[in-house]
Length: 395
Image 1 (cartoon, rainbow, N blue to C red):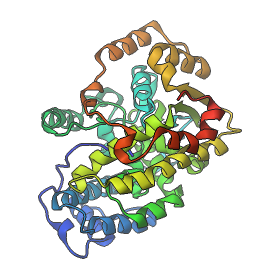
Image 2 (image 1 turned 90 degrees about the vertical axis):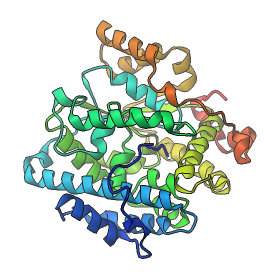
Image 3 (image 1 turned 120 degrees about the vertical axis):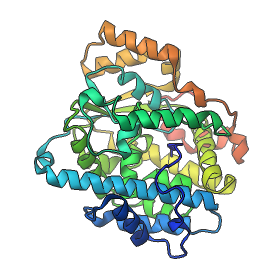
């Protein structure tokens, strides 16, 4: 799953993650100490957190990787504490709706990020921004979404860090840009984010059939907090929403789905390259055997599950990566037509400006191919044949 390649500044130099008995209680205690709070809300996060901790205890983890991901666990749990506390103190938020959110999903590396950035140029839509996803309280106002000191500080930190990260990260998100919902689900510790960073068979098996209701209930709670001072119609993005599609639709039955499509062999190669980068941060080197053996099946589920769940969903729009690359604004115009919304000249101009700058291109440097992971295109095309034929995906 996509990574947020920020280096945590919270608890980075502490050694709690090095303790032999690292478990959910230890991480909870660190988060409580950092925030002065102790109400974590529903306890559905504890079992997966214990599994995450078990992964961090593995001998394959580097000391730096263990500390970095241990710090992230504390950071995410600390944000959860603050969100739960804010939501409790402002009890009216529980009754505020999340109306017909636009949800962008699909295989990873199929243009979901670019689509989310383009829609973010339209002020009528409310994106989940990178900085606020893990620093949610106090919630920003509409006027301070991108000028909040927390956003500015993180952006400046990123500008310092990005030039010295070697190899260059395959995926990068600026503090003031749209992010993936994985960073909210990760605060319930049920997210592909954790699976992609630490090869842990027990966690992978758990996530394969986990009850995601608590994760999406927390997702709603966080959005209610964030929209309390900065309202708008949500545009949410996470490829793996397809993997968790049943839970997504149970929580947001009126969701408007944008489903992006791309040659699954190309998408898989790109995603495996991304996972390999994540492994360099946590393991020191990628576990190629793990990536090769686990990725194709996971991605196949990520299309077969929504193929079934969305067959009769009333609001689904399909965007093919090849069409987007050939004519980005044409693809966006089709989205607006589906939504029944006008694409104003002002918004079109903002989108054209974003396309000319393309702030995501800084991370597109390393070359890779499917064969690097011991796989061939023919294997992937055969595995995904139903998906390819159903949606006419160009290969």
